[in-house]
Length: 304
Image 1: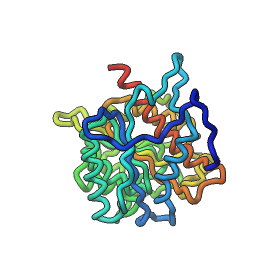
Image 2: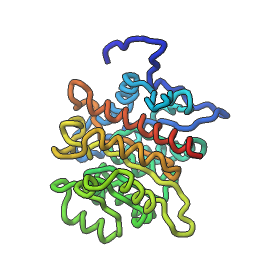
Image 3: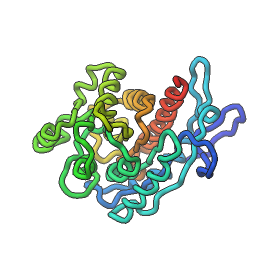
C-alpha cells in the first residue's frame, strides 16, 4: 500500500488493539486464513492481512447527520489470526477461538480465508441460524469451500433456519438446488433479491434465521461471500461471475443485517488478495464490509 497521508482531523479505520481482559468490547475481528481445501486455486490465506491494511484507507466516520466516529462510540478489538485453520485440527482451533470471543462482544467478525471457515466459525459462535450472501448453495459433498452449509446442517443446524440470499443462475447445479429445497432452506435468488427492497429481504431473513420455535434463541451467523458481487466489482473472487451484485448493494445488505441484535457473528470470505485487480477493489470492498458491520452494530446499540 502506498504511503498514506497523516491528518489529525481525519482518523483512519482499523489498527485496533488486541482484546484485553476486563475491557468493554463491542466487536472483535479475527483472521482465519484458510485456503487448503478450496475448489479453485487461491491465495485467500493472504486476505486477512490485506483487509487490515485496506481498512487504513478509510475513515470510521458515518456522515449522518449528525456525523458519528465509530471509533469513539464502539470499542473494537483485533484478536489476530488463528494459525493454520484448515483441516480438523485447524477447524477446532478456529471453533474454540470464536467460541471464546463470542462470550463477550456483541459481534465477532471472522476475516477469511475461503468459505470453509464458515463451518467452524458458525459452530464456534453457537449459531442457531444462518444467513448467507452468496452466489452458491455451498451444499456440496465432501470438505471444501463449497460445502460449509451442508456440513453445518449435517452437524445439527436446523436447515429451516438457513436463508440463502443471492443464489445465481449458471453458478449452481440442479442437484444442489433440489438438495436445498428438500432440506427446507429458504433461497432468495439473485433475481428475487433485486426485485425486493433491502429492508423487506432482511426482515424475512432474520425472522427465519432467528427462529420462532421454543428454544430457538441462539444467534444468527452471517456468511458474506464476496463472490455474490459482479466480477467487475470483485475480480479477486475466483468464483464471481458477470451480473452479480454491485458493491453498494452488498454493503447495504450487510449493514441492514448487522442492525439486528440476533446477528452475533459474521464472516467475510472468498477474496483472494493475490488475484485482485491492481487497484485492490475486491479487498477494499471486503474492508468496507467490516465497516458496514460496525455501522449496523452502532445502529442497533443506538436503538436500545
